[in-house]
Length: 100
Image (tube, rainbow, N blue to C red):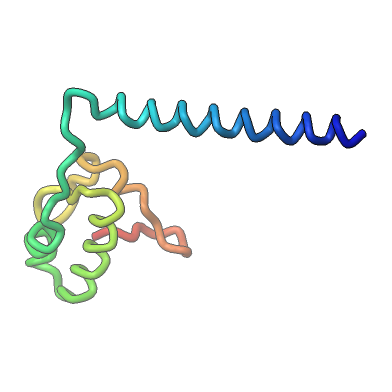
């Protein structure tokens, strides 16, 4: 009984280690030959996005949160949400769009 429990535990640990190694190899192969995506200047991008907003502080705060998560801000002061699908998909608890 004790041997079978030890065998099962060692098998589970082995599977976990194999999974971790495969995930690490997958991550390194993703950026092989290409550099990782560069971070954009969220402050500048959100300032441009919110420049016509009547509540600029609120707009920049929401935009900055969305930019930090998605590393993308749509061009222009409104609309163009299809340019950044991640940015467009973030919603508040009430189901409204989070990002300006």
